[in-house]
Length: 167
Image (cartoon, rainbow, N blue to C red; front, side, top):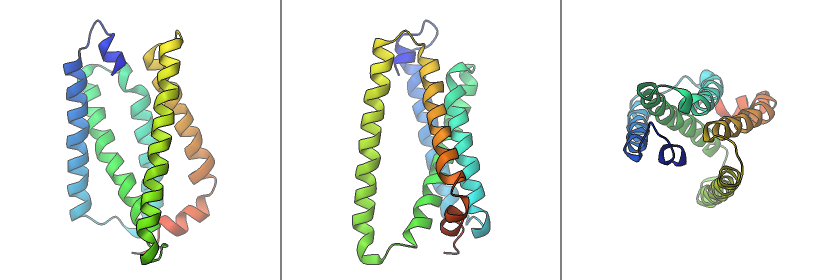
């Protein structure tokens, strides 16, 4: 949002259309997941492709013409639902029924703590550095891509056992 507030070219209304496109993408992604089951032996591969695609689109979105930003935002929303559903469905198989609520709430808590700290750190960098907002988003996506390489790609066999389980 700060990029749009400080832009000579874009407004907050443009930002709201991006958020709307992402929300519509999430709705469409949810409908796809409700009607279509991904082949179990391909879930890990799909998830990895989705992780990289979401980060690449997020990193480059602010460098695109606006109509492509809208399309990229829609795709990020759609693909985010895909990765979330694959990850959550796969991990739930390994958790006993009586523990699922605790694990889900703990995971939600950790995700929110990470999001809060990430927003604070990125906000601090944006506020007190001379970096362009677009460069900050590019660097943030680089951190995410590094995490994808270091965790699910490096631990490929372990992740495949979980993600590719036939549910």
